[in-house]
Length: 106
Image (tube, rainbow, N blue to C red; front, side):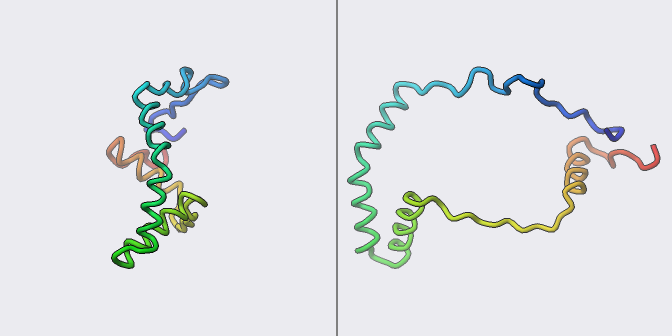
């Protein structure tokens, strides 16, 4: 570990980072989800109508894209970068703890 940097905090081996798990849904959340699911056919009909009969091309395209994204999932977007990840971590660490970070030769 380079001098001057804080130790990396982590989880103990074999211990969960979230021992209680995901919180249970409230009755209100469950009711809202049920109501939304009941309205799905009408919502899809509205989106389909906009897609086919919308006032302008932007609305038709947005509705069509929404249907495709919901049915097939959003398309993956490749992220291309050339940054040296070690340099990026060092820069972020220096920004967080302030100063120039560790000095060379120490």
